[in-house]
Length: 218
Image 1 (cartoon, rainbow, N blue to C red):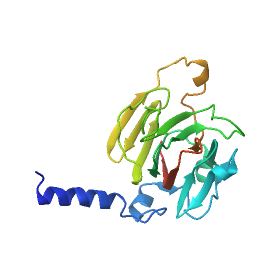
Image 2 (image 1 turned 60 degrees about the vertical axis):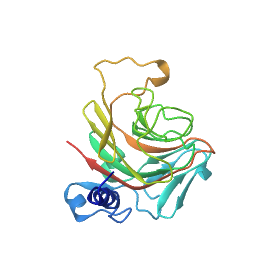
Image 3 (image 1 turned 90 degrees about the horizontal axis):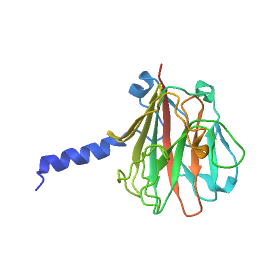
């Protein structure tokens, strides 16, 4: 049986994880070099491709829910061209949701992004590849978050190494091999540089994103 002190410590951790006001940076984060990509009030600095109705603002979050669409960061931070970085987002999925966060990608008018990697966001979809997977490359098949609860997803890229975290938990640690050869459908899944994109996957999938922040690394 858990002691009262251990239960209190667990509660303190959960509350502390979201103690900061959503869509704002603390003084400590600013000092550490974090920059906001989403202000919580508008889609300024973001560019949507197909299916405009699939992305909306609601209660300080970006909601992706509807036919395929991708919302690309197109703002001034690093001139939306990132190589080495830490990206952190607060995420909430709903039942059967499937979404993803792309990096090192480029805006395209239609279709699944051909360039860059996708980090999976999926806690209960029929696709068994779960949150934190480097989709199609290195998968996480275990549950690391649950639907209808906010969780923190962090993506760290340094050189050819990709790490994904949910909270403080390391989910996937993958290093791209030198001169790697990809199957045709994944030909663009390579380390390079580029922007970020949030995915609306299908009409059944509903996911929220907020507190989207980045720290550029050397």
